[in-house]
Amino acid sequence: MKPERTKDPADLLVFNASKVLTLAGPDRPRSGEEMQDLGAIPGGAVAMRGGRILETGASAQLRDHYADAKRLDAAGGLVMPGFVDCHTHLVYAGSRENELAQRLAGASYLDILAAGGGIHSTVHATRAASYEELTQLALKRMNQMLQHGTTTVEIKSGYGLDLETEKKILEVAAAAGRRHPLDVVPTFLGAHAVPRGTNRARYVNWLIKEALPALRGLSEFCDVFCEKEAFTAKETGRILRAAKRHGYGLKVHAGQFSDLGAAGVAAGLGAVSAEHLENVSEAQLKQMRNSGTVAVLLPGVPFFLLSERYADARRMIRLGVPVALGTDFNPGSCPSFSMQMGVALACLKMMMTVEEAITASTINAAWAIRRADWLGSLEPGKQGDLIVLDVQDISSLPCHFGTNLVRSVVKAGQIVLPPRH
Ligand code: NIG
Ligand code: FE
Image 1 (spheres, rainbow, N blue to C red):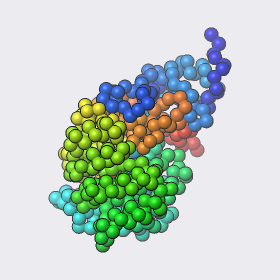
Image 2 (image 1 turned 30 degrees about the horizontal axis):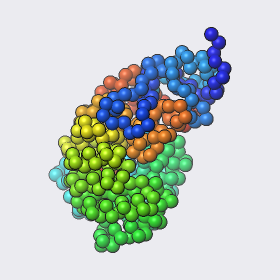
Image 3 (image 1 turned 135 degrees about the horizontal axis):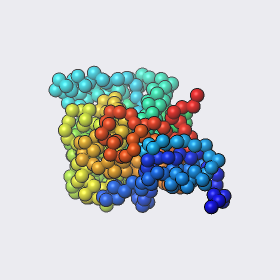
Image 4 (image 1 turned 60 degrees about the vertical axis):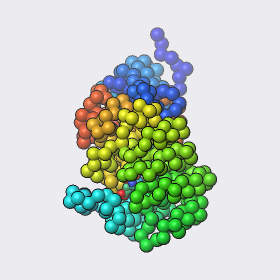
């Protein structure tokens, strides 16, 4: 039979995969049993053109159909969508690696914050850093992320806590996104902590009256850290309601150390996501399920903070709450940006199946940043963001924790790893 000639020519064909995990499925965040279905094509291939996916299918067939396309031989490796890291604080200066020794000596994360360290110490360093210094730091981190298979990153501000520095962080995030293959989604997190020496009521009013309207053009989402030493549930509700009026999508850091009720508050306002959730009541999880609020779980955080208190992913999945994974990459509570490590911890510490962890770190993570129409799965029309892993089966992923298994990265239909010389 002659190869079909009516097809659009592809400009890149990735073929010879042990499996292509398409993550194709229903047009909603995946929950419950749906998280098990990776839409795998054994011996699969992916054809792309103009940065988008044209078709997925069997290698033998697509090789015939797209005989003229440039080829990337997956050589029996596993092909899946690039990781979507839907929760990071990537733009910061300074280092807090000394805090680990303090925690090993018995201090808690909140003790260090209350004593003026923690977030406050990063605020100090970030205020002092120039736009260019922050941009260089961001680009370097994004290069490393890309090497570990992340193709899209959400970046929160929150290390400025004044208009000038919050703006600088959001502008650096956007500029880094323009200069780097990674897609960047910026989130305003002015409500990360009350800056030292500031009256809290005055700071909350300033956030609502000045910062939210001023920064609307620079960030799509507004996030609040609801926690002891940060913001109360009542303040969280006020800030998120104001953000909603200004047209921001809503996110919340909820239940990291204590359940103050923020997940329920956010779900009641139709939040896109509630994140952390190590401590959250079943009633709030049901509210999240009913409002379609994605639970973004960050297992690298309890791991690095020497805690055994992980989010109860099994309960969330049983209740039908869509679960996503992120790293929370930041200098204090998770200085690792490896989504592969996140997948391993999800399995080893939260008892997620490997299938669930892959769904959570790709398509559901894309839902958590409102990019699921464009990213997170390998379906015709979507952006051609994929990775080739040096394993044949998904079961290997959590087993090689700490090892970078990424062999190649394709971003928007271009091979970006290994780099061309
Ligand atoms: O998500 N929880 C608050 N914010 C970050 C940590 C930020 C920091 O410690 O610098 C988090 O864990
Ligand atoms: Fe965070």
